[in-house]
Length: 106
Image 1 (cartoon, one colour):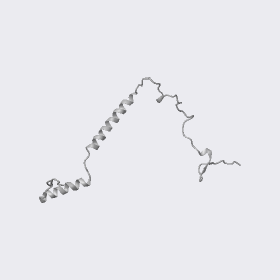
Image 2 (cartoon, helix red, strand yellow):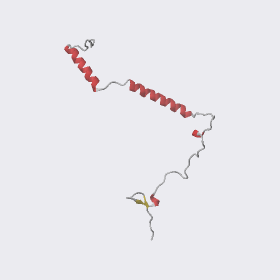
Image 3 (cartoon, rainbow, N blue to C red):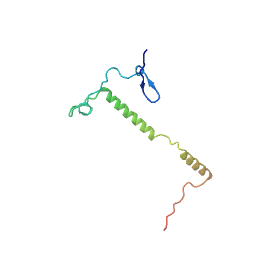
Image 4 (cartoon, rainbow, N blue to C red):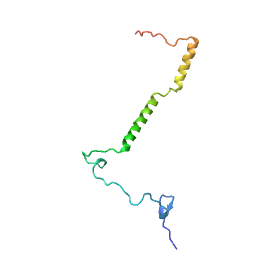
């Protein structure tokens, strides 16, 4: 009757051509290369769009907030906690936290 033609996609599977779905809406559309960077001729003035200023401002504010958060974050390292705890215990026992430096003689 009807012979079904299969398309070999890999060594394990074969799919009928009618089952293949291709993305897109009609003919592919793209900008033809014109030889200019970003499609603008040299000396042509760039006009910014309204959303660009808002986007750049929001990006700068977010970057500043993240930078401030990283700079002022609390020190949560175990080594810092252990040092503070050891200093507290030494003060309670009356031990010296600082030692006199001695000059090195050769």
